[in-house]
Length: 289
Length: 324
Image 1 (tube, chains in turn brown, orange):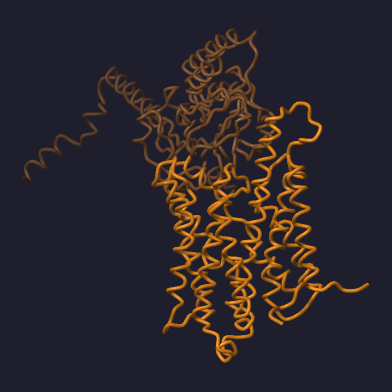
Image 2: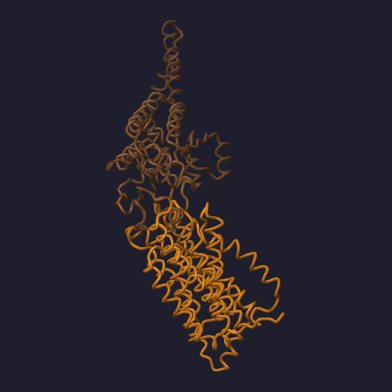
């Protein structure tokens, strides 16, 4: 044993092997190797870590191909299936701050404003907060572009937006010269809740006319009397309420045009799948004309 | 000017209720008089819905005030109101459980009703010591059960999917609009029975509001009266909550106003508070439909916004003891 150590010392330290004093060519080559390894290390360490606190943002992130960088999502992010396996960090109104910090994100994507103190705290910790809250389908396209630009996935983002725009154009050509049916979206029945802004724009681009244009909210109470007065041709009931006995003087009731087969997660989420909902809606609106 | 007596006052309030009902039927969010854009069918539908709404406002407003007057008399506490005993949080919890664990086609008001009744039964059992229910322990137990049920409510809300949470929160906002006459029948029956029971009980309520000792000396079986009155008040409130959601402040405020205006005699203030409650909710509802027709506020917001200042005014104007 003693002999071995002695022997090793005789051969001097390991540094001599790696850092040769003789042969300048070897020296130069090794230098290059170090620089290469070092730069590779920096690139690898720079991979972004994203937390999404909104299901629609999660969908956009996966669509532009950054799904692998998601280190945390909110509880409601359930699409695509991979999103279910990502660590859950609570929901948008009460995210788990300890979990967020422990996941060391560079970016947090939100749909509605965070608590102001929490936001300041996160910003102080050099975490960038990006709000994705589109009010129209056009806004949504812009947001997809923006995220693509931030995360360096411009091409994929552009492909998604081009696809959405192409399909929208096809719908627009289809409906341009027809009379627009009046549409009412029922989110809940007691009290009667409907949506405006994004939902209104989705109806608009699908070729319908949202009769609840004056609701000043994403979801607000709508008077049943107004519903009768404005007399929608079509009622879209987005699922989670019991049957509502709409009065029979409404055309949608009289001609049996109340639809319940719209998937709420696609229809109400301002994400890349919205174009599927728009096409579905369009086929409903114009199927009998 | 000659002061009108209580009986005349009651008749006056009754006439006001009828007058505002007619007003409520002909005026609302949508103008139905001289509106060429509206078909006759649509007009009839709107009228039918308004009649239902007006009837519900009368029944719910009256019922909430009745429960309030009963509970305040029995518990001899000016802060007693139906919701203090945990009915609202119980009903809310029932609604949440109904929404989360049953299919969406299942009406939410049955579990809500069950939750409200359960809350009060728990309160009653907790405050029952040696076969006697003391009023202080009943209110304390009510506060505790309220807190427990609110906690459970938040627990379930924060542990469920977003759509279901939304529908529960929307349901809790409450609304006076119903769509079928069949929704009104059970409620109407319960409130009418409640009114009758409370009226018959007026004599004993008078005695109990003097003090339990005094009532016992007068030969009143206070325990029995207390339990029946609490039960009736609970059933009424739970049913109202299950149909309209939570309408705050009516059950607390109207009995006080009735007491201030009509004196301590329950033979007068029981029908009086029923009529005043009906009138109050009716006026609030008309206000919400006509003045705020562009936003459509939840009815609970309006009752509180208009009730609170008026309540303060009444309390400041006539400074008397609570049960004098």
